[in-house]
Every structure is written in structure tokens, then in C-alpha cells.
Amino acid sequence: MDEYKDTITDELLRLAKRNFVSVYHLNMKSETPDVASPLDSTVIMNPNFKINVSFNYRLAHELSHILYGEVQYQSVYQFSEFGKRGEELLAHRNAIRMLMSIEMPSSPLTFMSYYRVPSWLENDVLRTYNELNIVE
Image 1 (cartoon, rainbow, N blue to C red):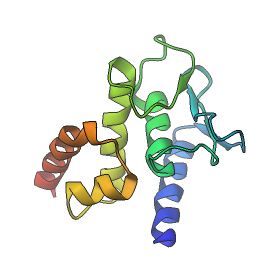
Image 2 (image 1 turned 120 degrees about the vertical axis):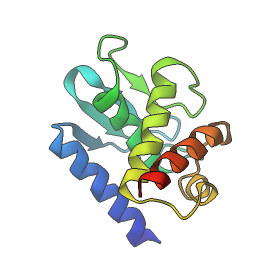
Image 3 (image 1 turned 135 degrees about the vertical axis):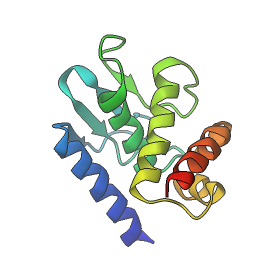
Image 4 (image 1 turned 90 degrees about the vertical axis):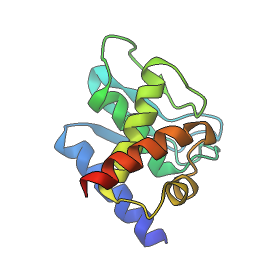
């Protein structure tokens, strides 16, 4: 399973590189969240961040702020699994789509379990799964 995780991470990093997004891994305190800075196209990931959500979901979320967000709204975003409005909700939805586009899951619940997606996003996971599943 770690090999699969690394494959997803590698694909996310390739996506960042293709879009000129710099991704840094900094070992910080466990309560320090990951951040995205759309103004300078930079993501800082804290591998020590103690949160239930998976690293790859968090990385996809932060990349989403830069690739699909509105630069003028905020200069820095900190990851929050509870961000339910505006740019945070958009980043959650785009992270789901990004990860499913890399590897379509066998089911929405498998996806949620694997990436440890917050349960309040279940309807977004189902909607995205159904949209992408029809395309394939």
C-alpha cells in the first residue's frame, strides 16, 4: 500500500512541477498545518502535522488553492479539515476531483477511507465519483 501512496504523491508532485508550483516539505511541530501561498505558487507540507486526513489529500487540497483558486482572496491558506465555505470548500472539492482523476477508486467509500476524507464531504465525493464514473 505504501508503494501506491508513493505513486499518488509522485503524480501530485509532477502536476505541481508542470504548473510551476514549488512544493517544500518542512518538519515542523505536529500542530502546524500545511500551507499554500497562491501569490508565489508555493506549497509547504508538514509531514509531522497530526491530523486524521491523509498527506496526499492535504497535498491535493493545497495544490488546488494555487491551481484553481482565486489569488486575490487570500495570500496564504492553512489546511483545515473543517473549512466549509468559500475557497476552502472549493479546494476540498478540487482535491477530491484531482485525486480521482489520478486514480479512480473502486467506490466512493473506499476513496473516503483511503484518503481519510472528512465525513461532511461525503456528498461531494459521491457527486464527483458519479460524474467521473460516467465519463469512463
